[in-house]
Length: 113
Length: 114
Image (cartoon, rainbow over all chains, first blue to last red; front, side, top):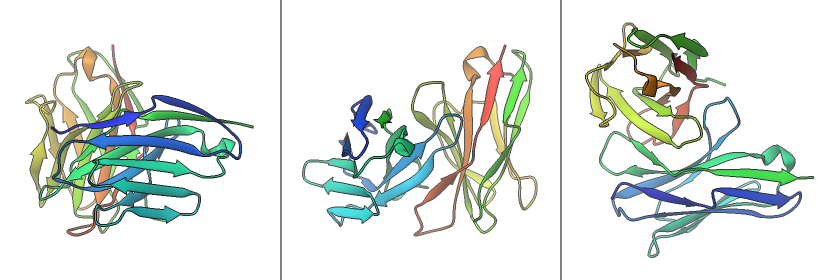
């Protein structure tokens, strides 16, 4: 099953709060899980990525938590700022291929001041 | 910082017309991709290209679509006879090489078919 299920569809967080976006997958052949940030009218920008041999990766205020047994991964944005307001997509790559990415449906995040 | 560029930013065309969307990938990258995003929906894979040939394509990428790397820097997507449902944002992406998984996306071309 080449799907990545993403939730929630939209999220409102107060400035300084924690934003959490979740993704789940079925295909155990996925071996790389990036998160992309997209502002209106722009292309997706790679934010942070993880491979399944680690359970957590942190870059600044952004953390990916990965649960291989549950086939779930999530993005945490600490100290959320109004400038973080964007659409976030999780994605997954199938191992052994040419790096085709399967995207989740996206989460529209609004951080209110 | 190197980036993927795309032209034009917006293309309006009439149904049945041919369009060519252009991309300049990051210069030392070897793998190239086209994705599309219908307004408000998720990003969908169209095609991957490596070593001057298509390496993988989706069911969306039918005979109306073709890709080409006409020279050492450009990567193009051609839609031979556009349909209304081809209206979308088209993103080009590139990746450095084997073992490097990160794909970098361009700003996109908004295609409007009337």
